[in-house]
Image (cartoon, rainbow over all chains, first blue to last red; front, side, top):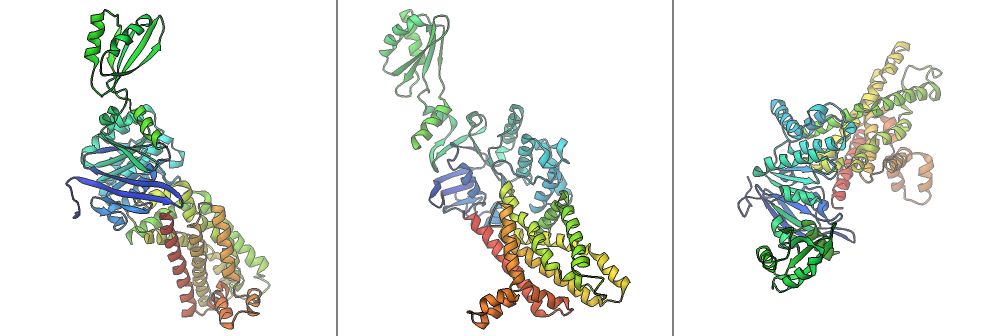
Length: 322
Length: 244
């Protein structure tokens, strides 16, 4: 089907994508690839260029420079071939307000080349997946934000596309609905290449195998959520809960450990305090710090190793770009 | 081709899903009647023809067709559905033609609903039904011309008000370009060839030629090529917006 695929399994290939609106450089230089079975989280502050990049991938905007290939088809040179293989949920999940979800899905299905029993089967499946049964014959205009979003999802999934581009798919959904959408994405993920833009960081942890952070139109980080967390100064940090009086002793003691870079102490209730030791070299030190405290006879109520904090990494990375 | 049919069906259904279609049809029919009987002196003329009816069509279209065309692209752009529409596997040409044909079919429906007029004049006398049929065809072609202009203008802006006003203004220019008012403005300084060219752009001149019962190839070519030119410009504008 696609001749120009270089590496096996690559379904989406973005190369040096740029988009300028007059003097505004919305996207400066974005490159990445997504393989079959991969869910890519697309992160960035508002105005970072996430939506603009997605609009170029789906052929709604023409890039100023660079290319986007979907299953080997260049979106600009072979738009119809590329668009056939994409399911797209645009930002805000727009849909024709006067239509009912049933009529809307029929229209999209017909354009996607289905008719008769096949169309009915596809619409049924999409309706079941997006749980739209109860509102099928109400004008989309009258639906809640959550249902509108699900109509958009059903539309994107209708033709079982190889590449899914979802611009904030869980925005405006309640926690249950968010959970359902994530479950749905997890279910279909093995057969597809999926790109999800979001600014909900827990979502990245929950469903994305890989995350890209962009700001000011550039890719600033690209890796697994764990790899991103490792960039955090909280990664491998050790926190203890102890009595406030012990904090100076503990600091003095741990200062002798070569891995400790800095401390942060927060006073709590009832004479307790929390002390955090931040690592210098990204090496685990929980066991050793715990042993040192025990041997010195310092009372410790609780000790734990911190994970990296994605939100902090995110702020750190994108803040530098600003 | 299949895609054009699907787009046409969806768009046309869209008109009737809202009060827009019914309001438009009622206003169109009422105004057509008012123009014919009061301004056109249908009865006083004492002739069994629909001249009084057709002669006001350009003025009727001048305001009513921009009201139809203004939403074609502006509405999609304002509500964001254009992003969905243009990322479907359709060509821009199919999108432009499908939307145009849907609006044109809607106006054809409005025109067909004026059939009691035709019946009335046949009851009152013995009109030349060939002329009336030709006039209907001419009127529909002219409506297509107004519509193509309006659709093209609608592709420029997300504001329906701007789309309406600009389309009405451009349509007005095309309507009156053959009148002495306009021609006299150019006749003083422009070469005769330019004046003739401007005169030949007039909707009125071509429409009145057809509504005399003569379907001249030149008049057909005029309307068809005008529609084609504006739809082509429409597609080019949609493509241009894609470049941002």
